[in-house]
Amino acid sequence: LAAIKIITSSHYLPKHQVSNDDLSHLMDTSDEWIKTRTGIEHRRISEGENTSDLCTAVAVELLKKSGWSPESIDLIIVATMSPDYYTPATAAIVQGKIKAKQAVAFDLSAACSGFIYSLVVAQSFMGNMNYRRVMIIGGEVLSKVINWHDRTSAVLFGDGAAGVLLENEQDSTSSFLGNHLQTFGDLAASLQAGKTLPLASFPAYSPHNYGAFEMAGRDVYTFATHRVPESIIAAVKKSNLQLNQVDWFIVHQANSRIIKQIAKRLQQPLEKFPMNIAAYGNTSAASVPILLDELIDKKKIERGQILALTGFGGGLTVGTQIIKY
Ligand code: ACO
Image (tube, rainbow, N blue to C red; front, side, top):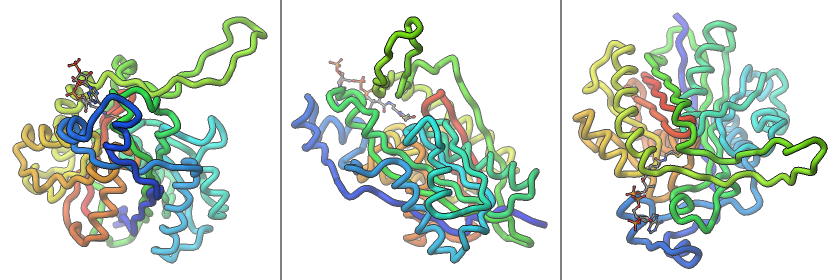
């Protein structure tokens, strides 16, 4: 029987590191406030590199680690809420740069749930359309949509990208188990970035300035601490497993307090919820694969273990994919 396996993973972070103290010179905030409310200490900020550059760096490294030829890839999905353009898709730019000539490529917009949504879409293409080799990357340059004078959002985010290669393998010991996706469009106003405006009247000139990132922090906090545990429970149940059988809960790194709340609601030890938010802040669609790759690299995640990958954010959206690694 064919089953989906994560062949390899990789991540890329811009070099420039910005500390909480650095931000306290730009706005009325402090290292103390940011650390205690969010767990964030530093974030990486891109200078001159756009989202497709970060994603291409990840793609090149994935090819190097796997030894796959670019022409052997059937599908490339980039999950992002900060693409280079409306069109072309960031995934199409990556496809062109790595010369993956046979690959169909498109972006997926589901904010911080984007990587999880992409895993589920890939699984469907691999099952229904016989796509065998897939590249999925979550990448963001959120710094270009942040208002660097709005302390309520600017302190939370960082730039980065990470991804995986998936393959449909005969007699694989690895597999994708159950998943759960949900969208709450009635809460769309709780988290917005990049708002555009129609012409007020034809043919009036409309300057291209896009709305900055805005978030109702408290509302998203409450959303996450309730909907994420529900999503994990639903996906674990669909996988015919118990919560205790999950080795690692790899949860979107938005706020360490949110993750602690989720662990508590699920009655699972916090040791099963690894975190790297202190170093990178919230990197939206990139946060789950960055953490996944770091844990694989440190050999904390081992073949055969059960992983629950979970994202939540703009949309509002939530999603969980259970994987036997
Ligand atoms: N520095 C200092 N003070 C601040 C800052 C700051 N950076 N930001 C806000 N404050 C002040 C507020 O003005 C407020 O002051 P007041 O009491 O005088 O009015 C006080 O601190 C408390 O503000 P709250 O917003 O109530 O703080 P809270 O404890 O809720 O923390 C936070 C805010 C960190 C945003 C939290 O609500 C949160 O993490 N929300 C979830 C965000 C999230 O998870 N987003 C994920 C999705 S992201 C995506 O999809 C891209």
